[in-house]
Image (cartoon, rainbow, N blue to C red; front, side):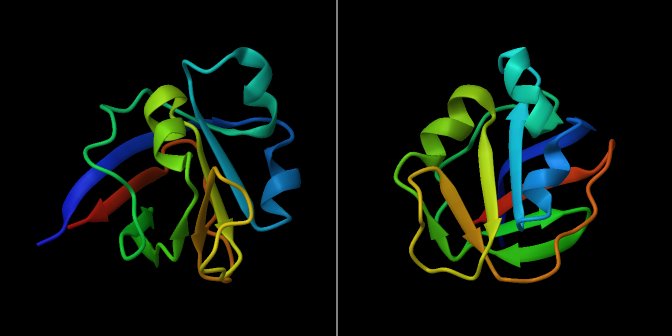
Length: 123
């Protein structure tokens, strides 16, 4: 049975977050991150912390829709733990372009909104 490694709720979308979303990228920051980062981000409530590591084969679940993790950059787990910072790239790559990326299939992005739930599950 899959265990929940991370779970949080979206508070709001920064006014420029759609610029990344239009490029198939979702940039998440916890509300505790510096204010200047909120403008381009999907801002979420402070989560309970990352239980384990995000790794290929895990699932990112947004509002009940599941996406398999294809690749995880070298600093992605550290970023999640430090500021709730998560970069989801819906690019279908199995090798991350940048060290903070979490790569998911190249599909239409879910419509996140205040109240949306983001969860990461794995073994």
